[in-house]
Image (cartoon, rainbow, N blue to C red; front, side, top):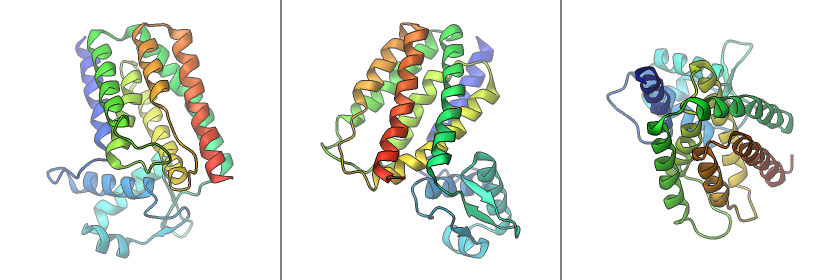
Length: 240
């Protein structure tokens, strides 16, 4: 039980990655959160060069924490290292989204199955609570196309990661979190171009209920359909 709680806590600390800045955190962590947020929300365009001088002016950090943050984002797949020793925002393409989706289907389903096999009552309570917050937030959204703000992104992320949270592999959880963030950049891009209504609340509720019932085949099928539908919706919105 103790082992699960430690992994669970460390894992879910990441779910605040898109909310307000913690000024008591190390400078590298502050720079990482700021850059991750702005890359995800499209402040920087795909392929745009990230010049240290401009980033220093924008965020107020010295070059050292910014370089470390950019290196970490490069490992996460949101930024790529330029041949001339600089950094650029990762490009976006149909092939890239399809690759992200393919990897999510491989890893998220494995993590979900593991979590459902070993998760305890505390894990179940975390999933239910995360869904409650997401459902309450989604009920406030207007009908029709909506922009997804930082609060929704963080709450949505927390719910999805909560379902995987009891998985006993820290590396698998980290890969799932990284892929989720890469997919989030596409969701944000499509939200700015979406012309049709988005409604995922029913899918999220069915997922939560099926996971809590420990119906592994049904839960994995629902998650597979959920992830695949996200790819379809993004490709339709972007026409790429």
